[in-house]
Length: 463
RNA sequence: GUAGGUAUAGCUCAGUUGGUUAGAGCAUCGGUUUGUGGUACCGAGGGUCGUGGGUUCGAGUCCCAUUACUUACCCCA
Image 1 (spheres, chains in turn red, cyan):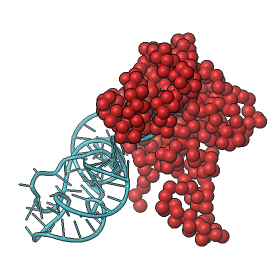
Image 2 (cartoon, chains in turn yellow, blue):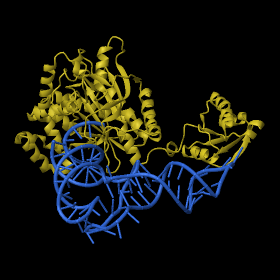
Image 3 (cartoon, chains in turn green, yellow):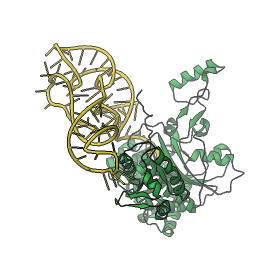
Image 4 (cartoon, chains in turn red, purple):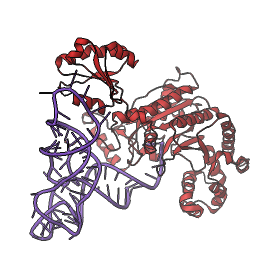
């Protein structure tokens, strides 16, 4: 049988893992620096917890888990009927699947908050670093199993939370040294636009069309809008937004927004006010790295967002994936029975961050050619090998990572080659003469220097 | 769901308008070197050319089907 793994999944080798841990460590440190504490939730959720939160497209991508022991079902007729119906259309049948793999970390988090509401201190700030699964078609930078690194604060509708998140993104991407643009928008502004032009149900079509501006030009956008049955009158009203769809936040002319919404759309006006707060507040953050722009076309498919929305795009030449997403959700916990719990959060996509950093060669050289092992003990036979056991014990007692070449071989060359390939810095050779004199041949592979040292001298050298 | 591309050694890939025994590099193992790695040289093992059918005197090469992988669109981290 030829070994294989499901498509869209990957194995991570040791070097991959060291690089991934490098990213995880930076993100995790910043999460803690900004006051978030860790939680974890199960890989699988009850399917009813997940469905209906991600929009139609998202719901289709949920990995469902077939119920166990369906052959023992007492009501096989009902089961068959559900199965037949499932063949006809996309639907959820608890007869067949009552569990599913989590699609993101935000919805399980909301579920967690509701279930633990009496034990949590609000506003509750948590971070969570775990894999999620999507039944997507894999392609470059798109996987079916990938990690998200989420930080959310729930139980506070203050916009200072958004500012803190922006500050945290700036610090994190600055430390990772990735060139990025933070795109910001606000669902309230989108709703306001839809309200004013009288096409409230068409807002997704509108943003999708405007988003194609740089590809198909302003006329192309207008044609597409018309194809989506949006009235000429509405298209006319949209024109200012098409022209200023993407604009650096610093250049943003807020009075135009105010004028557009004031007295015409309450929700749009409140979106404008939030934007104004953010623009003012960002001045206080001391942003060093992040380029921030307002992007009216940024909609984000997830249904639960209600206010600010974030997306970070990396710039690795032709490869410009979005590597972070997030936003504010005013009532995600409401469905689970807990009202008035506004939350806001962001999610780093570590797998794509990895791809971008690999593309741009941003990993420190030291990661690729470093080993967790400091010293390899080489030997000639069973006697000298077992003597090594005493020596490694002493090194490990001093927190020096070391290992013994496990196979018995007379060939020192082979053992040295092992050390070299594993990028182990030092080799300590133990022969009968060494055991007698209690000094060992201690060689630094990088320099080729070798001296006879006692185990105490070795420990001293390495600490 | 829509549209392309690819499939040959463990890995990455050559293989000409169809023509005798299908090649290379890397990796593995052995040797030059039975107490010293990264370099070098010599040698060895490893293939029903994704699967099934067809055309042909003859198919890795052409045609059809099928499966897997992959890229782009949609959507997304």
